[in-house]
Image (cartoon, rainbow, N blue to C red; front, side):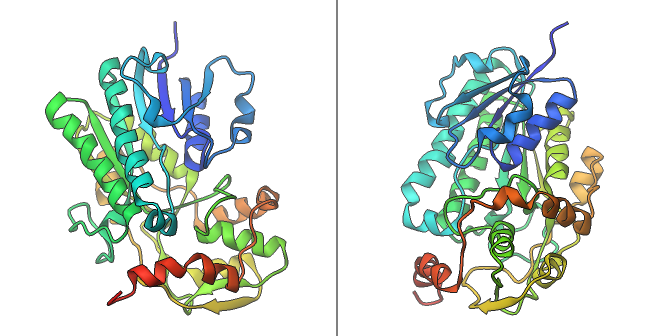
Length: 332
């Protein structure tokens, strides 16, 4: 009997590659579409000779409704897109094109394939400076083009649900972390920055006083939630996804062990991100399994992955985030 097929866009990337691992372990065939701009084929090395995993390097904006990789697919899980705040401020049209129009192209291929479920990787950045814990009905307030593009992609997903009756769910990810997170490109997520600094024997660049909290969720727990959202009978739902237990950046520094240098707090960054995970735990029967301390230990055991990552220091961070301050500062 032929194994059911899952299409994973962005499947060579950070979360997407862990999604591939989980789907293969659960008995699915997997078709991966990835531009490799933010991902690595090395992330899929365990599947090199697996005939049930097909990888195609392609921009999602080039996906067509009759795309052969979607033929016979049961689920489509859509991670592909471009991230980071500063590049989105500098190149907003590129973000809107990839994250909105690219999503529409994938939706059309999923609709033509009559998939059982389309699951969209949305972003908690849509909430802006949100009240915490943050529920799914919190007001939307995207503060920069990346957040806007991800939210408009989500709106397209639910428009296809409304108009074309495509079965969909969306998951608004808070702060995913874990092995295989991105090692190249723009200044971004705290884990990648800190890990390279640790390898280089440099102090950790802590924004502000480090008391700000983030709702860190380990990547394998993220993948489990997406598979649950694909398999569920619930349809047309939005789920906030985090651990529901925000951790101070200072706690991360304590676990990584190193010296610290403080850099200015940035406009538009929340003091705390905190997902209310009542809905995802109740409807999908999901719960986080990896404790923060255990997740950090897993990363440290694989720290060599970040050896070729760019090294960020206060002066280069200041240069990279200048646009952020100039654009998002009050009264700018």
